[in-house]
Length: 205
Ligand code: FE
Image (tube, rainbow, N blue to C red; front, side, top):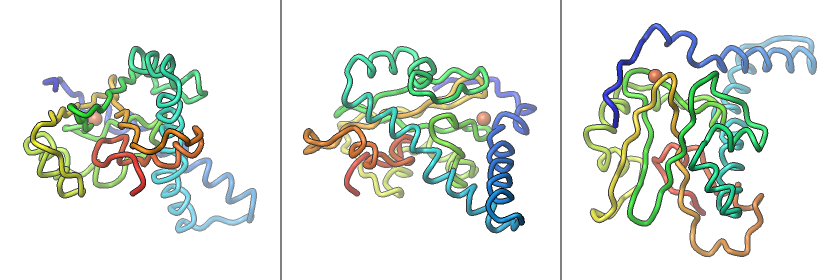
């Protein structure tokens, strides 16, 4: 974990997708219905937070699970590798993908604000932005993970990666056992946003 000099002046604009997504949401509503309701906009934003946004990351992970050369490129240079699949850049931030293994579990945070790999995960969930998560996951990651329902054996090393405005992380979860027969698309369906933040495992849960 780095001890970074985090410039908080970036807070108001380091997450430019909020306004972009809201604009898109408004656009599609106007197009479809010719009217605007804020509840409906919130619903669409929620969709980006929980489904559409993280699906980009899930496709990246599924590709990495099925194509070792792609996985290699992803771990070498996350930004270039996600761009191969058509996912946008992080506005000059670097994307670093960290791999979970049977011995190492990674989890991401932004301790000082809410930097997040939005090109692959969409909008951060509220809890990711909460002071509680940001402070506690660094001090007592195992306790926080267990509160998310993820109990890790003591033999597994937990690594917490602190994001910056210019450096974002994404977790490459482990491929669950018993998935050898699955297609890339089926695999993508097993990969949740939380698994790519590192507070859950990928899988049939
Ligand atoms: Fe931040």
